[in-house]
Image (cartoon, rainbow, N blue to C red; front, top):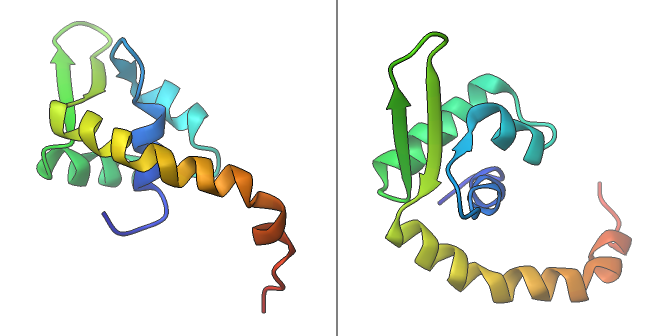
Length: 96
């Protein structure tokens, strides 16, 4: 679960319906298509994300969380709440 994008991607996938690649990219500002594709593959390999390929023209690929992915997002919710609560303090920390 290393890297700065994976948690944001998981957050973007916590929808009731499967999400298309473009939707995930809009939900994760600043990520390139290449990095998003790579991170999604790693999350899929880890068993956290399910990839559904619909054979049509144009090709349609949808992503959703697996049960394991949903349980991880549930575990991350308190961390997200902590971050919201302390955002002002975190943003005020000087960066080199």
